[in-house]
Image (cartoon, rainbow, N blue to C red; front, side, top):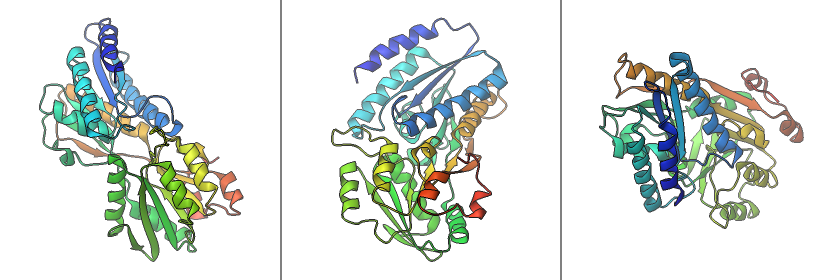
Length: 341
């Protein structure tokens, strides 16, 4: 927590040298910028998308400064509130032309503090509708929703894997993890922790710590399940309260589960060795947010009230994992896949 005041001074100094007239862009993320490969890859792709849009529409006439609030791993409201206040201090000192918020935690904590101000806010990588944070209709808030219709995915499963009868969905207890789990229930018409969708039994469980998940696995919690779906990037904590890398989490599950493991959402998670990953492109979301920002600043579209859906869905297959399971990706899904390994 003591790093932010220093960071604030550093950022103010670094932006003092920006050429007059250059677009000043300030980016906030709740995730650490280094560490878990899945998390850092997702954030990096969003940033690459924003930069690509800005460069295409403005050339090199912009400055992009990124600040990690690091609130994803610290789940108490007091910490998140303090980081939001310090982030606001950074924004007020820098006076950027535009602010980008890259996830739900950043939007829900910092968005209300900057709602209605002259600085426009553009979000991406967000699961909740801005109305859930009291921001819909604000004159300076627009962005891109990261939404997946789980019915599409489960329909593909029904068509391509007729033998799949029981699916376990593993989520975390963070705010965004709970949102994604809620969307899953709503999409599939489930009530409570589970139910049936097109004949498939679906169970959803959320865990806060790896220790709890490990005890669940050791107790035979996955016995009888044909498939496991990671709901987002489950952000579980170790015994010291630190984020547990997703790759190690996937390895832990694989050691006790012989079914097909599937990940939804993250760029980079396919490197963790799961059989299949279904991702919304973070690069495309970042690009859309950057494009909206430039057009809004030009006066071509309103600064607030613009809402888009994330574009470009990808399927990734790990053929080594399928061979390990004695299986092959179903042809119907395989033909849709990109990034095959």
